[in-house]
Amino acid sequence: MSMFQSDQDPSDKGASSPSVPDSGRAVISRKLRELYDAVQDEGIPDKFLDLLEKLDEAEANAKASRG
Image (spheres, rainbow, N blue to C red):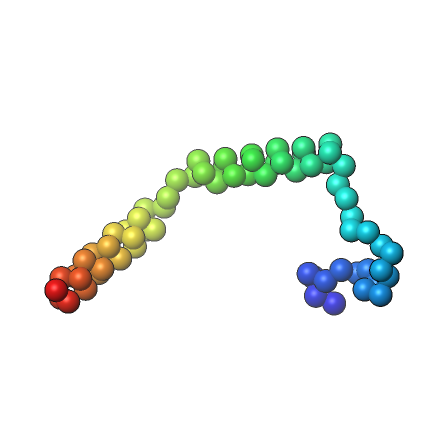
């Protein structure tokens, strides 16, 4: 079984999908927001910025050679 497959019997048509209580949704929402904020505060690594700069240069050179 794939990790994305349900362990429920697909022939069980009377089963409803699992539900999350409102208190659980609030916790999940808060945790996701904390994770998003932490990732957003990390900044962009210098290596990645260098790669982006090289890409910009390559695109500019390609446009200049075409026109």
